[in-house]
Amino acid sequence: MLPISGKALSEPVLCGLTLALTIAFIQQSFQAHKNRLDESRRHLKEREHDIEELEKNRKLLADLYVSTVNCLATAIDAKDECTHAHIRRVQKLAVGIAETMNVSGDELEAIRTGALLHDVGKLAVPDSILGKLGPLTDEEFLQMKLHTVVGAEMLEPVRFPWPVVAVVRHHHERWDGAGYPDGLAGEQIPLSARIMAVADVYDALTSDRPYRPAWGHSRARRYILDAVGAQFDPAVVDAFLIYIDSEPILSAVSTDAFRPMKLQPTSIFTTAVIQTPGTTIRSLPTVGLARTE
Image (cartoon, rainbow, N blue to C red; front, side):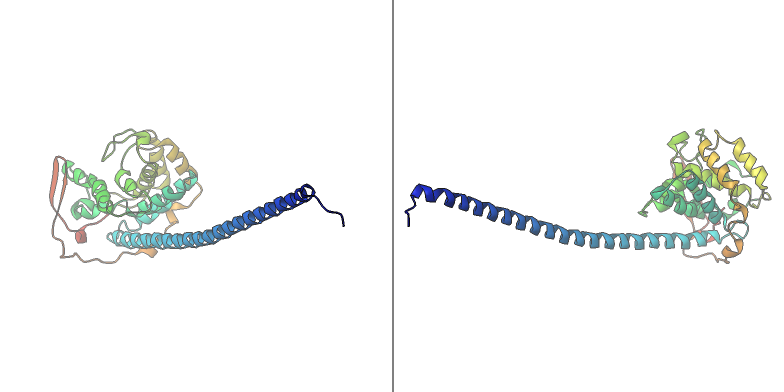
C-alpha cells in the first residue's frame, strides 16, 4: 500500500467537509423555512377563522341595527292612516335612484336606513301642525323645519355602521342653498341627502295629505323637472327619471302590508322643549301624540 501524503489527503477531505457543511446548512435553512411556512399557515388559518368570526359578528350587528330601525320605522309609519307607508315608498324610490347612480356599499346602506328614519324628528312636532288642513303660519313652519335637527340629534348617539345622520339632517337642503337646516348648496349636500330629497318630495306629492289630494304621476314628475338646478341636483333627477319611468313606483309598496295600528298617547312624557340658537319651542306634545308625514 502506498503511503498517502498529508497534502494529498487534506484536499479531498476538505472538499468533503465543505460539501457536508453546505448540505447541512441547506437542510437546516430548508427546515427553518418550512417551520416558518407551517407557522404562517397556522396563523393564517387562525386569522381566517378570526376574520370569519368578525364578519359573522358584523353581520349580526348590522341585522340588529336593521331590525331595530324597522321596528322604529313601523311605529312611526303607523301613526297616520292618511300617510302611512310613506317612508317605505320613499325607501324603495331612494334606493332605486341610488342604484341607478351606481351608489353602493356604506352609502347605499345609509340611504336604505336613512329613508326609514328621515322623518323621525317629527315625533316632536305638534299633531295640530302635522295634520293642519290649511297653510302653516311662520311659527308653525319654523317648528316643522326643526324636525331635521331634532331627528339628527336623536340619532347622533347611535353608532350606525353607515352615515345615516347626514341623510336625516340634510334631506331638506336645496341645490341652490335655500333649504334647511344649514343652507348647504350643491355638492356640499351629501349625495345621500340629495337623493332623499327627490324621493321624499315625489312621494309626498303623489300621496294624499290633510291639506290636499294626491297629485298624479305626470304632474309630480313635471314639478320635479321644473325644480332641477334650484331645489334638486340635476344628476339625481336624471337618475330619478330613468328609474321612475321603468318602475311601477306607485304600486310598489302595498299599503295593506303597513295598515296602521291605533296607538294610544303615552303618559310617560308630557312636554318637550326644543332649543336651537335664537329659538325655543315649549310645550310640544309628547312622542305618543305626535304624527309624521
